[in-house]
Image 1 (cartoon, rainbow, N blue to C red):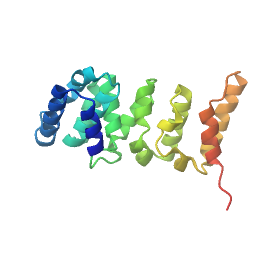
Image 2 (image 1 turned 180 degrees about the horizontal axis):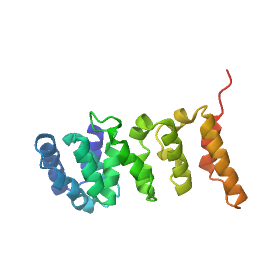
Image 3 (image 1 turned 45 degrees about the vertical axis):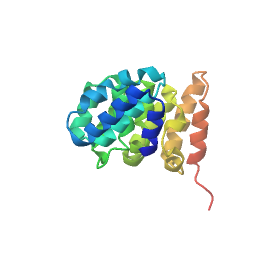
Image 4 (image 1 turned 60 degrees about the vertical axis):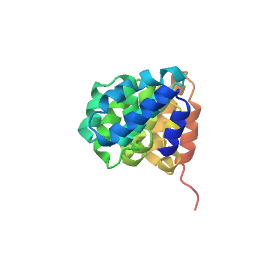
Amino acid sequence: MADLRTTVRDHLDPDAAAWLDRALAEAATTPHWEADFAAAARHCRRSHHGELADATRVLLLHAARPDIPTLTRLYTHGTAAERRAVLLALAHVEDIGPEALPLVEDALRTNDTRLVAAAVGPYAARHLDAHGWRQAVLKCLFTGVPLDAVAEWPARARGDAELARMLTDYARERTAAGRDVPPDLTRVLAHTTPEEP
């Protein structure tokens, strides 16, 4: 988080950097930080750095340490960008266990590729069960989200025979329909093969 804060500040003009310092201090000590969460994109606009608002919101959530009801409210009532930031922050908010999985599952039901990519980060790698994680991989392949967005996929795919079956079926469906098989499917399928002793 310290490195992320330094990176963000390096891309902000002096006024925006001062705003960030004030917003983070208030997020850590007062309950009045949600307006800054919503306003992050406006303060980062001059930087022309597309992911800067995401990073700023992640920093605010890390500092505020919101509970599950607050995270759920921010996600449910937020813009697509605010929802994405909540998903990205899940791995960095302390004391958040699997209770935030409904937010991940909701994002995986959408066709918004930026939400899907944010949903399959480190938090999902830690907390999605095997079935949910396999479905998340298929969702990425189906929507064109790069496999590298899926945190820890090589370790979770290794030796997974059920995932191999699902991928093989999906590849057959695409081939039968005259469609190309995504290269990422071949990559993950290779990892499902059990290693020789």
